[in-house]
Length: 238
Image (cartoon, rainbow, N blue to C red; front, top):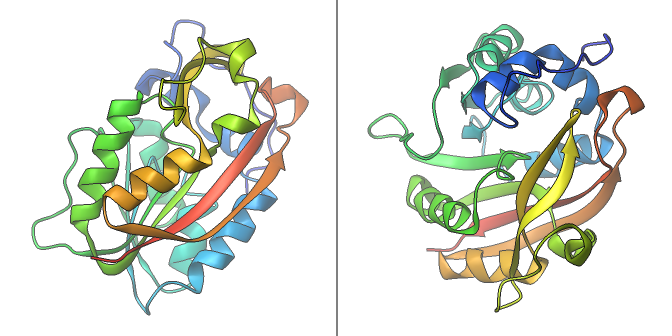
């Protein structure tokens, strides 16, 4: 992992845009790459993968620790990110991987590819509810039967939704426009509840087979809120 202290992004970059993430560069890894809960999650994931699995990392960031850990275990990594700088860092970290600049909304895997696992680690926050639902629907079609979808997010009930947003949707499964500080910027994020994730995944043929929650406290210089990370692994049943 990088040892340098996080630098602050350019104030000219819109929060959570491609330019914003490119302005972070390796400072993002310095702030978030030491997440012990994520490292534990990756070790759990390895037990669910077949040998030489084909894995898509959606929002791959710097490639560390997700792609580096999975590649070191002998798996084949595809990674996408909207930031060209993040993709450059991922290619450097995992030369054997295939990384490209792409928007998750429009990306499709290479023709004929059937994936054994898809990961979305802290990459869904900017999407609205409908956007997240659309991604899960697409991913269900890309995964082989028995493949796993791996999510790291924050469960809505683990944050002060009523104090930071307009509240929950009528069905109580999702909260939108939640105020949050990330790398010195005030951003708005969308979060499902645990029950919301369960219902969404079930609707697309998944069953949650593993989950846990762990607090992550970014270093002070990252100027980011604490994050109660919700990790889940869901297996595709059909």
